[in-house]
Length: 389
Ligand SMILES: Cc1ncc(COP(=O)(O)O)c(C=O)c1O
Image 1 (cartoon, rainbow, N blue to C red):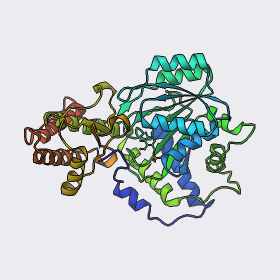
Image 2: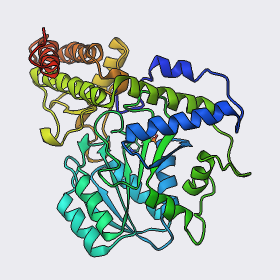
Image 3: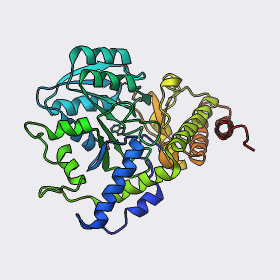
Image 4: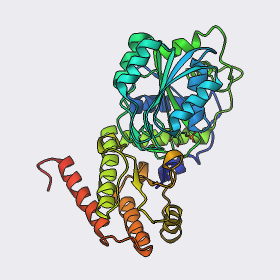
């Protein structure tokens, strides 16, 4: 229950064991088509293309940046945590003339500041993280997307944490390249990036005078392969990962996007009610928090790493430390994918209750689990409406 990878769904792991289908055969084609079709639904785009990139999520992000940036292009990045810094590092590697709008760790980037910079500096590309796992903060995107469209900038978004756990609306937020991984709220393993591209982005990557510096992380080539125009340089496909992507996206479709977002919201609401009832303090403003990871402050005098190790050793539950300016100050508890459920939430609260009490932290024993249960019940009742039993 850390910051992801989260435990994959058993159904996804099982799907990965299917025998690999030969490239260009009908089974292979059908899998690509299904991943693209389900992927479009999850990204909420009717016209975008979807491709996968075999590699960590950042391979998908780097493919987007490498394919869109021409050396010397002005690129504006919004930074409010570690993964915004990653966008800057990768963009700079591909020759960007970097501009940035920063926020302190614990708040999103100011939307008006971002919009003004888009209007005044006219970048070729604007890049930002939707939900930064290092801070647990959610970034509003619609107005930035609108400003990009008006000024002619391309808009790239890292939705690695958010896709499948809360609303990501690629079409109405006017996102040109949106990247996710399977390993957070989609309930899959790490090692496969999902990328969607708008018509504008496809035009931009296909219409380059000089091809991008990366031959492997080239969205134009990947797009051609996924559209059935396989070229001789196409890499071998990581079939188990493709099967994982299909199954994970299938599971989202089975559950329904809105129901899945609601499950993530309910799990974090229950967890947060429980943590507060134990006398712990949550990080950041309530309305800016993401619904799939919870940052909670380490109480004074409590050994941050010691609690995590004891929770793992005695209860088999792993939560995460923080890094950067938050190192040693907060724990990060994920409720992603299969862990956005009441047994996982109650287990982590019960485990923390025992571990903190054993270390002398004064807390009302059992209050965390009680508060989480009460919150879960009221969340379920309000979700099912006035006719609920
Ligand atoms: C928001 C966000 N972006 C990008 C990444 C990078 O993912 P990967 O390590 O799979 O490259 C992560 C990983 O935690 C993330 O949380």
